[in-house]
Image 1 (cartoon, rainbow, N blue to C red):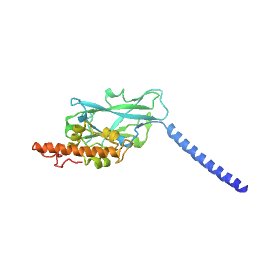
Image 2: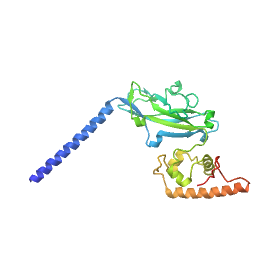
Image 3: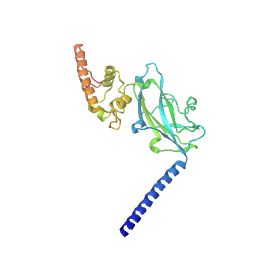
Image 4: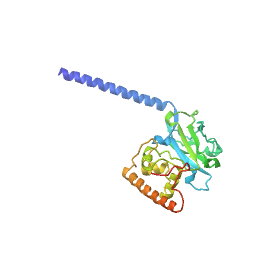
Length: 265
């Protein structure tokens, strides 16, 4: 009986400690929630903080395009619309220029879109990319950060920024990482264009992620199927061999990248 009493006291003490810790955690959460209103970029995958875009996939006559970014609010919902302010952060490397590569965030044409609607916790805001002639030869970086103000005063530092790398030529997709290299070899623009021509798929981040299951963090997702990737790799290797045979018969070289590297899988 004494042992049972001691056991009861020990269990009760442990229970009190657990409850106290839980209540403390709840209080901390409430303190953060009540500390003020804030904004974060909303995404489900860490890779979504680095977006790659190329005008080459769209219409040849398009002069601009829109990338939509999801933003969520922190704290109690507001009963009226609240302005959202975005700003560019200079990276020091091929930074995009407002008015040349994208529509400035403070442009009057965008202000009605940069708004957190009343009584809603999420909103999609547009970033207008401009098809400047310089993008035919290079890529530019646009690092976007949520700017805090008198109303939106806080946020998660890890979800405050998103970077868009964009161009008007074929460029290596972010999801062309270790698994893609394993099945389809080292990336090259000539190989990329050949894959597009032969399969009628873009082989961009969306295709690599949603169809093949490759991620930018050198990993895979639930869409990954090793047998299918292996089959596709072998089929493309056979197709490339047949393609090169035709080229040789026409007096041309086998398919190569601009630096002379032979395209292979």
